[in-house]
Image (cartoon, rainbow, N blue to C red; front, side):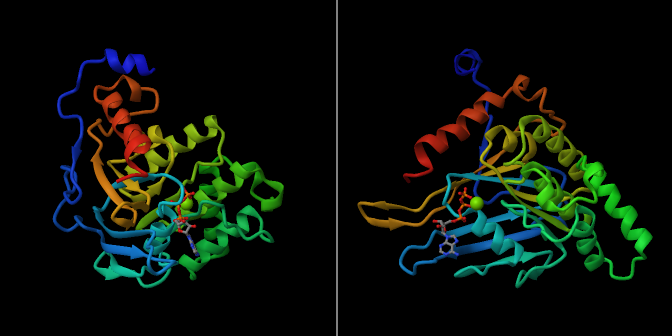
Length: 294
Ligand SMILES: Nc1ncnc2c1ncn2[C@@H]1O[C@H](COP(=O)(O)OP(=O)(O)OP(=O)(O)O)[C@@H](O)[C@H]1O
Ligand SMILES: [Mg+2]
């Protein structure tokens, strides 16, 4: 594949990189800056913040991925956006309100599935659905739960408990649960990490279809460069904190890459698209050479 990269003609301006500008899509003033993250930092150890000065925005309906090496602080950022952790400094504003705690407006899929082990798949998801719509009748909850379980291909396992499921199946329950509450925003922490390639592909396609249909706003962590290129409108490249001759430098968003590929892209067509290899190389180069030393 790499030799193929060299043979391809250079694509004019494949990457628009800008740390602040939103992508040039049809976004009205109302939907721009739906999520605003301003100068976020987090220090578990006072003198050595994991990251500092992290600022970015997400427009409504936008899909943003963040990529970076282990330990740079991706999950920490996601937890702060979810309201599950607090930042040392900085603010997060969603839909005009400061995020100050967890909310059913945000659906979270955790890096590890976080299901309630004593409840079945149906009960795990119904628990979330009933929290979201407390007035719903049982039949309404059942129909809704069954729809989202079917979506992730788990109907045959709907009455099983997490201990009876594989890692990938548990992860799919987590995905169904996050989708089922129809949140204003989805926060996904490597949601497909535990899935085999085939299931991963199918669920990526499903996720893309639902997100496009529902104009869902998504912030997703991934380690998979192709997954980011397939799904994201913009990709945030995050660097690790590191020691430099001038002292410790916290991690942060080193660059924001706007995905130039047409939004109608599919897994099968991705690597035939002009600009794909340039984009891929750019991200891989970042991970290899810049992510840990800046
Ligand atoms: N509760 C905590 N107490 C102390 N340190 C923590 C805590 N949570 C995270 N850290 C540290 O903060 C850093 C960032 O962790 P985080 O889980 O956000 O990384 P990540 O980018 O999601 O990594 P991975 O790709 O491995 O999931 C790590 O060095 C981790 O050890
Ligand atoms: Mg993580």
